[in-house]
Amino acid sequence: MKIALIGSGNVATVLGRLIAKNGHQVCQVISREAGNAKLLADELGAGFADFDGVPDRTADLFIIAISDAALENFFVKGALHDKIVVHTAGSVSKDILRNFAHSYGVLYPLQTLRKEMPEIPPIPLLIDGSDDGVTDFIEAFARSISQNVQRVNDEQRLKLHAAAVIVSNFTNHLYAIAEDFCIKENVHFDMLKPLIMETAARVNHASPAKVQTGPAIRKDILTLDKHLRLFTAHPKLRTMYLRLTDSIMNP
Ligand SMILES: NC(=O)c1ccc[n+]([C@@H]2O[C@H](COP(=O)([O-])OP(=O)(O)OC[C@H]3O[C@@H](n4cnc5c(N)ncnc54)[C@H](OP(=O)(O)O)[C@@H]3O)[C@@H](O)[C@H]2O)c1
Image 1 (cartoon, rainbow, N blue to C red):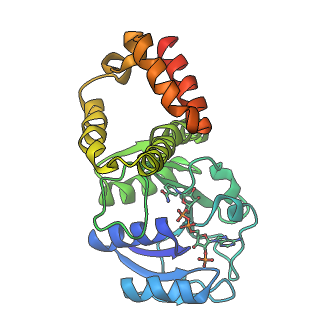
Image 2 (cartoon, rainbow, N blue to C red; image 1 turned 60 degrees about the vertical axis):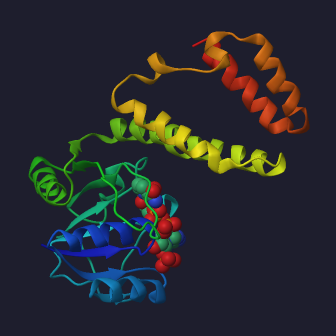
């Protein structure tokens, strides 16, 4: 299949690599900044254009991977109304593309993606389409690049995106806070990495609520007090520790 990518950031880059790896051709990269479009296009052996350029109408599918806010006012010269166009956002309705193309939908990667990642991780794809035929087309394409494809509507995708923020973005933020704490308190954050890996791996075989450990679930008040005293010098961390402890104690 011939694919045109609109956007050249993290998602466009990783999806572009995945698409090429699975035997499709990325024929064009279109981005706001021509230099960014060229960089990705050169890597993928594709043509490139900025938003004033002409879209490659030989593409079977246009994938728009630009920031959520930019999707609201998205416009590319050269009509794509008779092409199949999808966006990649978790919390934006598919219908944002209604005035842009007759056949439209969503190809949302439920994974954290960065163009610097050395390997492409498994990427579940949540898909949707403007009608059954379009959804079938998007699903067939999605299955050609991912083992894990689900049809979900706007509301279900929004809920999964919100949950994704909690399990990925929030967890990573807690790692960042813990790393900062370790640096300031002169202990090695690296020592925590096996614990991070084991905690994450556990979700594969148990419900998280069933495998909670630590002083809060044990209601170990003496230990909790010691930690809170230690965090007096780190007020933001102390507040977060109290809130999460309360949430664990009172689920
Ligand atoms: N990264 C993830 O983990 C992830 C996962 C799932 C879904 N998504 C979704 O995928 C989409 C793209 O995310 P991303 O992580 O790839 O973003 P990103 O790396 O920050 O890249 C943003 C892209 O949007 C373009 N852009 C920014 N502002 C624009 C504007 N005002 N007008 C037109 N283009 C504009 C940029 O073009 P230039 O560089 O040419 O300026 C760039 O190509 C978002 O909807 C996001 O919610 C992201």
